[in-house]
Image (cartoon, rainbow, N blue to C red; front, side, top):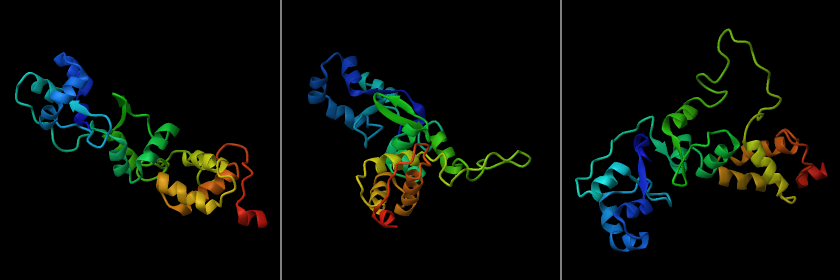
Amino acid sequence: MIPRNRPVINEPDVARRLGVPLATWRRRDAAAFRSRVPSLLPDSRSLLYDLAQAEAYIAGKPVPALPVGEHPDDLLTDKETATVLGITPATVRAYASQGYLSAGITLYGTRLWPRHEIDARRDNPPGQGKGGGRRAGEPQGPRKQHAYEGDPRLQTAATALAAADGAPKSHIATQLATEHGGTPRTWERLLTAAAAGQDGTPDSGYSDGLEAQA
């Protein structure tokens, strides 16, 4: 997490500010730096550091403490976002690519999401809960043609069906649940909808072994 969207810096830029090659800095100075200025994203491949802390260390000054506690402007990784939403990091990335979540903010090649956005999605998912339904006095909008209309997982299900090569639907559903979260039963329903062309694409013509015998 990057607290309160504070400015950050990565290791190549730290070495550049010190005027030494990155390899030299990592061999000679990195261990001492990391012991005083911890990475803000310890679970990520991107080692990002708070800019104010890094500048204080470089200047030989006391390293200031970071603000504590949750804040709406915190930037969350895919893992942290997944924890808030109760899904997997892979599903977070899939939702972002499909428009169910925003694309987030990219810093030094790492994609992050503002806490206020993720908290709002958790507390008020589209079509559910407070603010998700029709307000009193508002005209009723068009009814959904099926339960999963507009669900970005439909495209994921359709893609899985296209690559299934005749595998049983239950097996595909179990694999999708493992990769993207949710239950195999939910994914079976999504696969059924996708197979019927309800993902917005033509009917895939898919049928599992039991359907073929029906």
